Length: 170
View 1 (tube, rainbow, N blue to C red):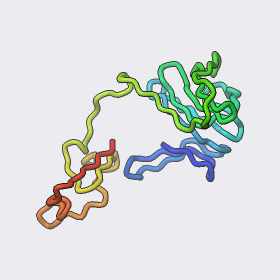
View 2: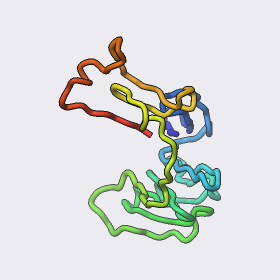
View 3: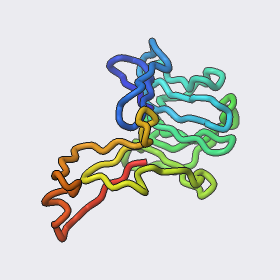
View 4: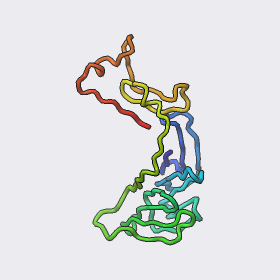
């Protein structure tokens, strides 16, 4: 899932780029998005209108990045140069989480063990020479990118290298 200022929309696709779908058209500056899978909702911040959407159009100062956890929304603000939190459903109960800082906070991420569930990962059991991407468009559930295996299925020079690196996304 991603948002773009230039085309003012939010889109989603498989990790390999297939099944690209427009989710939200005709926005202004959608610069932060977060999904709430448990509720089937999408939240986004718009920096031109200074609002949080899919809440109850909450008025914010100048939001930039956001993250969701439980019933809270966390966001960075470029006017106050702070990190804030509020209730997810209506952005009520706003609280500042940081003291004044010399630098504007850009991104924000919430990590908690409960956010990560064990799921099937096709890339774990299959070897790609360079990059493995999960894909619901592929019958195998994954797609290898930038691979150039030899006729025997090996990965050529990469296979023989002592500095072998495997990148798994997913």
